[in-house]
Amino acid sequence: MSHTPFILGSYLVGTVVLLWAALAPVINKRGLLRQLKARQARMEKTQ
Amino acid sequence: MNRLYLFFHKTGSPPWFYKYSGYLIPWLWAGFLLLTAIGLYLGLLVAPADYQQGESVRIMYLHVPAAWMSMMIYGLMAIWGFIALVWRIRIMEVLIISSAPIGAAFTLIALVSGSLWGRPTWGTYWVWDARLTSELVLLFLYFGVIALYNSFDEPRKAARAASLLSIVGAINLPIIHFSVLWWNTLHQGSSIGTSGNSIHPSMLWPLLYMAVAFKLYYGANLLSRARLRLLTQDHRKRWVQDLLTKESS
View 1 (cartoon, rainbow over the protein chains, first blue to last red):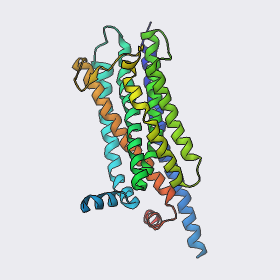
View 2: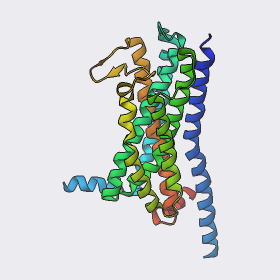
View 3: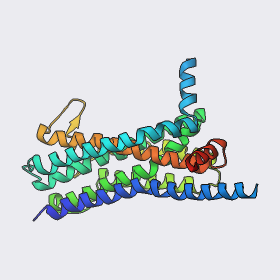
View 4: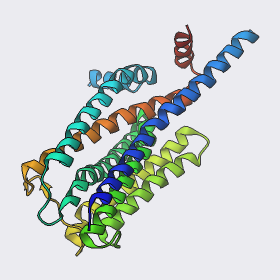
């Protein structure tokens, strides 16, 4: 039995999971900052 | 004592934490990438195949550090949970809930890579073995902490419930660790311990590089998540408004 697919599969899963876990806060932070800046701009306009 | 109190008070302050953790994150990512590159090079290209496991031993350089991380992170969550409940330090609450998804990610990697190692070595992807089952319980505990936190509207109440579950769930950690001694399991015992190890240095070094790399990954990811959570919770506070004004100008 070739072990290569099992080794590659493990590292592929590891890479995908770690990448997802690392990128999720970066993407969410960008969205949040955009939202907060837009709100701040709206508030400044109304004042 | 006063200086220690002052230190905790200062580092526990959200603006201070947000500012200084921002300086640390790029260094942690750089360290993680460097050590991962070295660990993968040694583990996948330099280290020999095992006399029993063959080439599948290379999965161990991912599986073992991930399994260590899954337990370490939960242990930290339990300690921070205790501190959060006793001293009500908000940053500890933030660290608990920011750690849970990272811990779940490492537990998932440990389970999947272990399963993929088990097929060529044991002849099966899964057995209801004490070590495997208790590790699966750990994954459910992580999911439980996340779900419990998200079921509350008020973050401080949510954090207290999550802290409590973190502390109670820590009972699973000695069960995972000693499961190979307490029960007759298919999973082998520890090869590395305080009394020495039974691994050849050519296999030990990549394992250690990957173990340190994963700790740096955890540090970087935890700080990123904690900063995001602080921004979300404090978005109406003065320090966040000042930060936004500074970034806009």
